Image 1 (cartoon, rainbow, N blue to C red):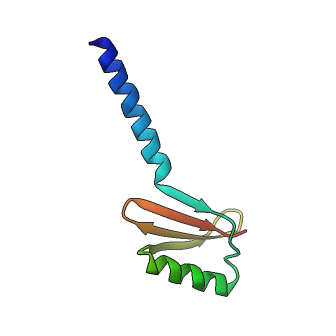
Image 2 (image 1 turned 90 degrees about the vertical axis):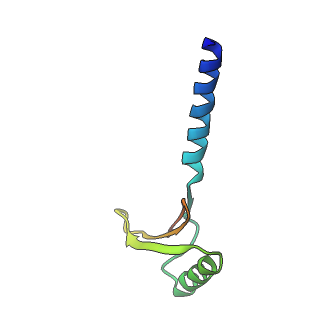
Length: 79
């Protein structure tokens, strides 16, 4: 019985760690200061069902776009 509980606890920990890592996708390869890149990104995201949640500059003065779809987020950070 004790081994079954340990196995169950280990399986739950693995499941939780996989879910936490899968929720956010970060892409920092785009030049978001280019207006054409921003336009293409927003159009592509909208066509795929992503909703723009936020646009801001981070502490390193890089432009950040946050898109959301269900429980998943995509974060785009400028080069």
